[in-house]
Length: 350
Image (cartoon, rainbow, N blue to C red; front, side, top):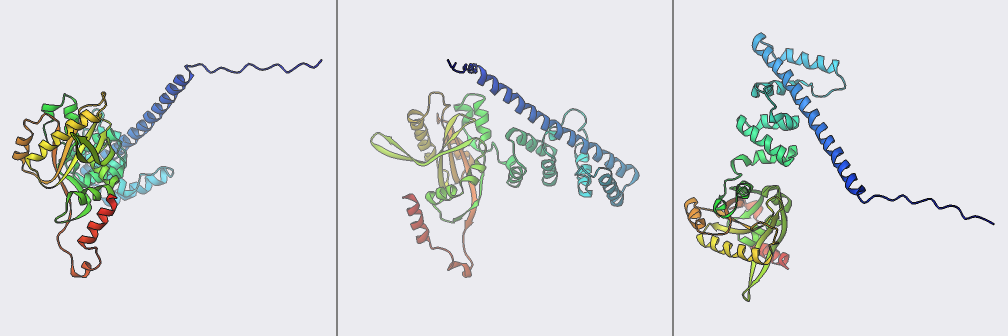
């Protein structure tokens, strides 16, 4: 009589296995990040030590360009598998050591960002305070070299946290401070070319046609929800220009576009919109919604007075874009007329 083969017991994966696996993967990833940071710190420290010695020799013994050039050649010969010993890079090392003389005393924040980022900071900024500001922001937000260059070219350190707001009076700490630092003034929309007498719709569609650049300028944390968001209130229809959700602030951000200078009534209408969004759209776990009025211009005193007794958190900023005031005669026939532009905008609305 044939016997059926004995069934092997199936391995049972414990319920806790997935949690265990996730924890192990997180530890591995964390270790990889720490290892990469440690390698970077060692490299930056090495460059500082080389630069410090070169700079000292230049001061004490008058080493000139020819000696530094010979040093670059000899280092390349001695370490053929290592990069970074070009004449140009040795000069950067000397400049780096000169600008950070106290690097060895404690851990400098610049040792935590890549060498290419440090070169950009040396090229673009003279102020130690400003360099450290950008270095900290790079660590905080994980900026690539290109993103850092973008923020340097647009003078982010002079714009961040400069919007006129009432956050201290309408938001709890520390959210009020974080929200204030999230907004800028002015916003730089240099990727837009607008007519001198452009309207809100033209500005809105222009921003959304360049939505990636728009989101980059808004900053980390902004997630686009939609445009012309419909609100039905008291048998009337209202529309929000732009709606975002900020995952760091954990709240909706309503953006209203104004192609004129700020007027006090803008704040009242935004206050109304925020009340509606908090009532109709806000999740119980969300923080209070925030309003951002982007205007062509503003009077600081008028804006501050307008926000003084408003009970919803609102910020007021200007925007800057390329304004097309007049065209050379040879270009006028090659560009669409105002009527054609308006027709195109209407078609995009459909």
